[in-house]
Structure formats: C-alpha cells, structure tokens
Length: 309
Length: 221
Ligand code: SF4
Ligand code: SF4
Image (cartoon, rainbow over all chains, first blue to last red; front, side):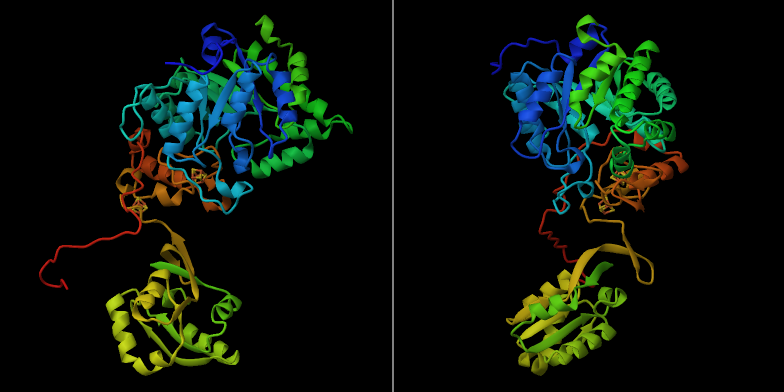
C-alpha cells in the first residue's frame, strides 16, 4: 500500500510510551474562519516542545476549521498530530471515510470522543448525529483494523491507529465513569487522556482505581491553563465535565492585577511537576485553550524539556 | 399520548391570510388533554377568529382525527359547513392535520406544534420517555430508555458532561444514564451496563413508517 506522505520523522505517541518516556502533549484549537496564520504559529511553537498535539473537533459544539485538515497541517509542519474524532457531527459512514483518509496521510493516533451536545455550542438548531458514541467508535476502529467497515464489508486496505479515549476523573458520580473506562479498554482503547483535572488528591484516588481496573493502559492527566477569573466562571458554567475547585479559584483571585495568567502558568507547572515527581500517571496533556503561546513558559517553569526526557 | 403545544395566534392568523371562511377541527383525545384542541380551545379559537373578521363556517371535535376513514366520515356528516369553508384550521397533532389533508382539496393549516410522544405526569405536565426507535432496547436498561432519556441517545453509559445526576444540556433535566445506572444497580444487574452495546440499527423504523398487520379475523377491518 502507498502511504501518500513523507516518512515519519518523529516517534508517534505509541513509540513514546513504549520507550518509557513521560508523554507531554499539547492542543491546537482550530479557528473559526480561514485566517489560520495564528494557528500555524502555535503549531510551529509547540511542535518541538511537546511530543504530540491534539486537534479538537468542533470543540464545545462550536463550528471551526476541521480537525482532520489541521492534523495534516501539523504533519506538514513536522509535528505529531493526535486526531480527535467526535460522534456529534458525523455518522458511522462519514467517520469511516475520514479514518481511511487519515490513515493514508500518515495520521497514527486517534482520540475517540462522544462529543458535546449541540445546545452547549453555537449552532443550536443543528441536527445532532450521535449515530454512535465513544465506546462504539473504538469498536468501529478495531473493526476497520481487522479489515472490515461497520457494514460488514471488506476494506481494500485497512487502517491501524493508536486508539485513545477520554475519562473524567471528576465526574459525579464516579462509578458509572469507571465502568465506562473499562468498556473503552475492552473496545480497544490503548491510552487515555483525562478530562481536566484540578484536584490532584482526587486525581490520585482516580489513578489508584484506574490502575486496579487495568495497569497496562497509559493514562495522561488533562491539565487546563487557568487564565482569568472570567475564564474560570465561564468554564464552570459552560464546559461539560469541568469543575475548578475553590482552592485554585482562591489562588487565582489573590493574583495581583495583571498577574492572573502568570498565576495560572505557575499552577499548571506545579501540577505537571507533581505528576512527574510522584509518578502519578504516564503523561500530561496540556490544554492552554487559546493561550498556546504560554506553553513553552509552562514547560520551562515545570522544568520539562522533551528533548532531554 | 401525542403532546402538542399551540402555535402563537399571530402565526395562525398569518397562515389564514386571504382565506376568510374557516372550518376548525379539534381532537377529543390527545389535543384535548394537552388543551390545544379540545372543545374549549376550539370555541376560543372560533371567537378569536371571528373577532379578526373571519367567518367560521363550522367546528368539529371528535376522537382520533388521525383516523383517516373516521375523518372522511366526519367531513361527510358536516358536508354543508365543510363545503362552505375555503380553509381548514386543524388543532391536533401533525398526524391529525395530515389526516384532514386526505379528506379535503381545500387549504389545510396547522394550529399546533407537535412535540413528542409523551407521558402524563399530572395535568398540564408531560415528559418524553420513548422516541419510537422501532427496536426497543428497554429490556437491557432496566426499563429506562437511553435512546430518549439521554439527550445524546447513547448506549454505553453516561457522557463526560453528566453532573450530580443532571444532564449537560440542562441542569433541570435528569441525566438518563444516571437513572439507568441507579436502576440497574438497585436491581443488582450492573452486568448489563458492563456489557458493550454494539451499534444500533437506526433504520429499524424506516421513515416514513408503515405497518400492515395480517387480518386477524374478529376485529380486523
Ligand atoms: S428503546 Fe426505542 S422503542 Fe424502546 S422506549 Fe426507547 S425509543 Fe421507545
Ligand atoms: S449528561 Fe447524561 S443524559 Fe445528558 S447527554 Fe450526557 S449521558 Fe446523556
């Protein structure tokens, strides 16, 4: 089979884990519109600072430049993309077709999500798809890897992806989350990124429970950069599955004028350090949400340099 | 029961623009319960239209406007008033409105929005628990429907947006998946939740739905 791309120059997420390296990934949130210069700047800024970059897929149900297109741009620029695929906007056929394309263009890892609901986004009257959800999406990919689409038809050339999924350590109640986590592994998930974690004690408890269920899958803590009190209020009210705890809210509140972002950077750097020093998990996923420019500073404060890991 | 809500009166007036002789149809079942097309609402509509200068040639309220043969019969019975009308305002669900469509060549207008197949909680309070998917999976989920009571209709457990038993779309709405989890837990049947549910057949009830039963002797038409 011909892969229509240049040879890989970077190790993929799978190889990073296999070499025992602590994974550091970042995130690219594509823009609304065709002015992609800033996004490309972010890609160039991050590509050698992190092992891989997630590309969000119409995140929070807000229509944007597509994740698959952005994944290709990341490759063109020499970065390693982690393609997020949600089930909100595409049915099984559209997802399968996208995955065929992604594979032929050298995309090696896919993060499987159900997707946020339509009413939280900016196309409130759109028809939601949800033909399938995250567990079934993992199964769909596993099936394509075995050579068949979900219609039961043979593929002329299959796919192979490193299959990632999401778990929410701060879900209330947590029990159904943990069962779903187990189901995702059974459906083929090889690694996980968590939804935003803020409460590190809770995260430790979650990791203990997760390791008991399966001690082989790789788990990366999802860490969100707090940028301002306004952003915190917005996240608490609007971002599903995200709850910023009081102690961090206090720390942000106490930040002197103009220092909110730096305080957020310090908090995040501290969380990364804790994950590494206490060997809490297999990696971190940094979500800077629009402040990608701050990522090098966060990593520097945390004393993390992927070229030396 | 089919739940309907009334369209704003201004919208109804717009629909009837240029048509002065109106016949009003209401339904004795669902629209009566929803208070969107029972005797009282039909009388009220008649008065409001007349106040706007329309002539109401007649009104009728009967059970099962959705029954097409029934509707044709009712129209024959009201021949004169029906014949005098240049349009029909139907205060029923969408099925009833289209049943009237089959019974007349004249203009037919909806007075209601049809919103869902609903359960009656108490008078004036309705909730959706089944969305007619055609391949009922209630057996596997403790008789709580994930297709309908989870906003996303997903089959393998709650999404990441659920919080304290509420749905990410609306803090006033229960998360269907939390209800299912609690029910299965109570029944000691969490193994059903642990089982991966494969892709659902969304074409089990292919639109437009059609069912023709074999004649069963007595009672069959
Ligand atoms: S599974 Fe389908 S038929 Fe059964 S209650 Fe739910 S929507 Fe209705
Ligand atoms: S919060 Fe619960 S009901 Fe709402 S979409 Fe998620 S799983 Fe479904």
